[in-house]
Image (cartoon, rainbow, N blue to C red; front, side):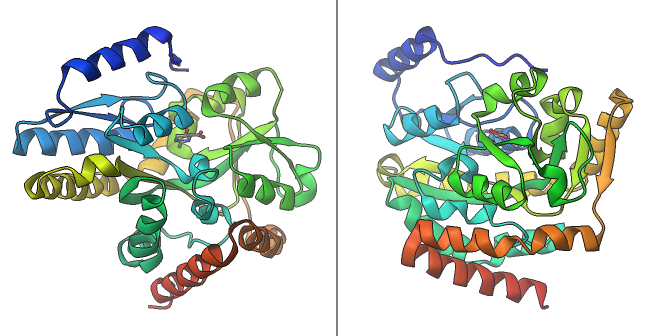
Length: 338
Ligand code: 6CS
């Protein structure tokens, strides 16, 4: 497992000192939630390369743990200490409850081509979400999928009954907890930095994440039974502090938009085939790993529990969430019916 360097007083101090001496416009700070070479890092590096190749600005990337947990880097972005942040809706739920829509199970298609088309075409993604992020002082630049969610557990599970008494770690948003309640498990919200240790010590019995992350974070070492439930995709969002963004010249705003487009394209190419490659690496590294792919009939038993999560989403988000869900569903229909 990679070393997880947590926030230290020293690192915050260094950051604040940097603030007083460096100009924001010249050296932009960009934090994300993952490790070197992971999907969010591929995005960040491509963004940095575009900015630096096309302007005099530089971009300093901070990876997981360098400035704290996911909630810390969001706070630092809202406060203007960071200019850019990548935070997944798994952690944005308390700030923007509507972002939890990605955790309604079996809402998203399972085929990557359809998922990608949805992100490109969706009015909910490209028009409605930017307004919700703007209410929190954030300029949403890009939402993108990282990979299909896969459950890992201490034993292969094929039914909701199999989840009985299983403590499954969820990212810290209430709707994801609802999903695992509906699946029959006991959801346990934890920040990322605590997941490996909690699996190792038996504090939790499982978790969910895309395969690349199960490989990269070494989760298969302590949670070796992989279960393909096909219930959703890990989605993430890259954004800027809105005051910072609005204060940029038109030329720099165009630079940021172009860098975002370039980073998105690079990242989408990167995730194609990534799950298969990561699974092969996991199987190469460990003989203990099992792979369970649920049949359509087994999936149906989980799917029939999805409506209660959808209801919980509408209860949590009110009229705004209801409108978003309706648009989201219409956008999905447009993609899957073609
Ligand atoms: O499970 C998590 O908390 C983490 N999963 C991924 C794929 N990225 C970052 C996030 O913190």
